[in-house]
Image (cartoon, rainbow, N blue to C red):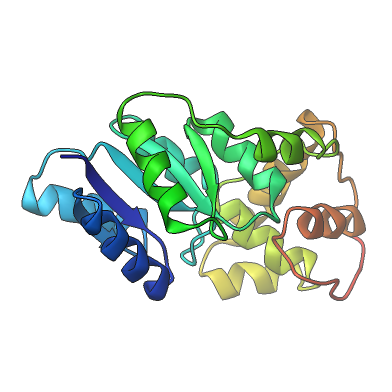
Length: 218
């Protein structure tokens, strides 16, 4: 019997997957909204790692795609279950160790088939996704930490760095150091951001801020 864990912050999606997986004769060992919840449940209850984890591409807890996949892929095959509009994030997930991607628009039978293939160690057919990822020529992920993303989101949206530090409950020097590291990381992947306007552009490109805020210099 294939053992499956579900990590998705949309309960309705999880409920549909749970029912389909159980109808297919597999076992759902965990269903929850975050990787942290999954790890806590494993540590608390002591059950062995599942064969497959179906993971939503973007969770609502501020974690990055890379850190979620890395935490899970060491012990289980990770399938990304996502909508088809984030090729940059898909590429990030595959680079971090996910075995493949299944669209949330796919029939449940296709999801079940993908789970079976991943559990058996067979490659998933991701031609559609590979094309989308390959077409994303501008992608070069800077691998920002959760804290760096938080600081960048507020700073790029127009807040002074001191206000950012106060809002996040960190020292001004820490916030400044985070912005310095963000700039270095973007430069290292060929996407330099020497000004605050540039940082806003990078944050918008990576979905860290949804729209332009107040722009200003450093």
